[in-house]
Amino acid sequence: MTEKVTQVKLSYGRCAVSPKFFEDFYDDFMDSSPLIRARFENTDMEAQRALLRHGLSHLIMYAAGSHAAGMKVDRLADSHAKGKLDIQPWMYDHWIESLIRTVPRHDKKANAQLLSVWKEMIQMGVDKMISAH
Ligand code: HEM
Image (cartoon, rainbow, N blue to C red):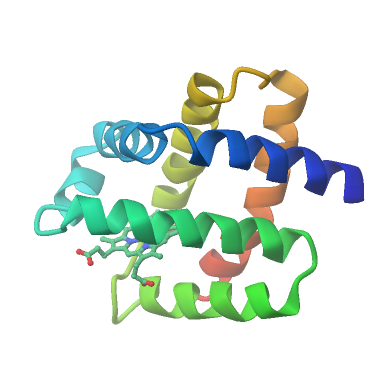
């Protein structure tokens, strides 16, 4: 696991310094379904991109075994659950697919093996969020 964690952390570091990474992610995610686009109709996307910078690192740290990050993911799960944002489980599949399409556009070192590790790690936090829905 440790080597996978390092691989994803380094890859995320390369993405996070790439100026349009978060913008490209949300454009791809919103393009993936009109129902998803509608959820961000009244959202300040600049603020949202800054929030995702942290949210994504919490998902990675959670997969790396951090208890503190697990508590952050619990909080995210709570805000996205029924009665609040009410994010449907299928929307998380789109979220992961968008991420996996966006990473290689910004991380020149990305390859199929690295992307499958990304997917495996992100899925852990997403499963936690979906199970709280
Ligand atoms: C597991 C992946 C996700 C992460 C890390 C994430 C992260 C965040 C964060 C950090 C916020 C800020 C507010 C808060 O802390 O609750 C937020 C808000 C939000 N998220 Fe997510 N999110 C994820 C998945 C999704 C999905 C699949 C959708 C589906 C459309 C979604 C839609 C929203 C919306 C609509 C808001 C509120 C925007 C506003 O304030 O107008 N999120 N998300």
